Image (cartoon, rainbow, N blue to C red):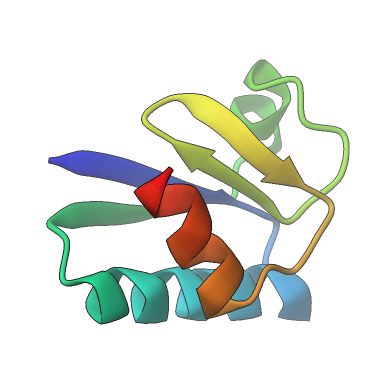
Length: 78
């Protein structure tokens, strides 16, 4: 199962990114665990300086941007 983490401290963009990730997972019909990471220490461990960030299976795919469900779906399919 794919693990998708949304890194963010709870700002509006972070919440929107989490919603968009869930929409993308649903659109693609894939089996994925979506986890919200809000602890700054955990976020810093990824080397992310700007949130929201998207991490797929431990790899940072995007930081500092609010991606659309379509953009996320493209990343997930790649």
